[in-house]
Length: 450
Image: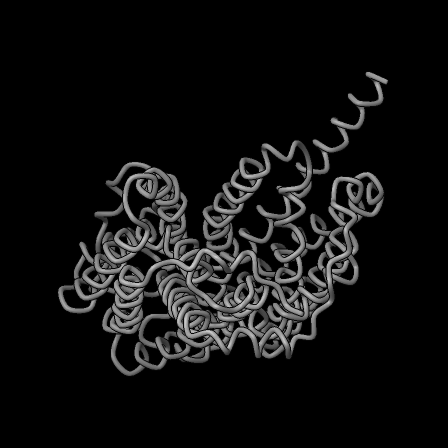
């Protein structure tokens, strides 16, 4: 009996490790979008608006797939849903391989959409599974640990992506890439998504082989399959569900827009393009890895983007402590107000210091998503399922706001375009203030659809 229990714990531990690898993988893949936007701008000679279509294709999947993913999970349960998600992600990676070899931008967009569709299903299924694999008393710890690895993935993604996608790539003043540099960038995209496809396929094989053991850790109670139209009607009937969805839309849009244009912004001659100052900063300079040429190249700037996402990872740790001592609405109002000030500094003052200010924004983005989410759930009159579904769908802001930023940066500059996320943060500050004046209902989690 003891050997059986030990074997079960070992298998469950391996299953949890695999689930945690999923969290790492989708964080890593998502943050690859940042250097990819800069790369496709040069590879296909695109405008800022056209390059941001890469982010749009990726995050559009959240808006279209979130509710169907929840229904799929209710029908198939966690492990089959994860297998379906992983297979979809492999198809997306293979589409990216074809796109890189044929050098066709619309195929890149298709590949990103399919890949993100798989990630959307994966997120819906993996979060509850991570919480269920093991002692119920440690569920919050396991989910937090998995999310930490997700943040670590978002930190590493830009470092590797910039190394593979941006070597020799230069897009200042509409510069066209020579054939060798263009071929190298396409080969880098090919290599990255080839190895990602292999990793995902290996994970899919593991989950298939261990599907019975992993499934045993998930509660057997069947979840009710709810008509998505009923969910939407319930969510749209709540003012706070709509306000929360708007806040998530603005937050994700601002965060993604800043990340996807960060490398292009830092590479500008008025920011770091003609400066060696970043190389004197510990860790940052080491990660960027100077090529010996004065100024910051696009590849070096792309590596620096990792610290934008790394700031969010550190900010979550600090924010967790602060939230135990400060009201969530007050902290959200403070962080969003600071983000507004930082965006205005970048847009109006500019210069070398603006590059450091822009990278530091990740620190203040850190607590926004979970705080907006929970504040909305506490105040929404709709069911938790309907509210959560609408909030997840609102992640589509990552598809829309970057396009607006692309239009503004194309007409002005990447620095001035920070006004757009600045406006998003200002509206989020207003959301926090209103939430602070509205008491929590504390009934959302107990409501259900009939």
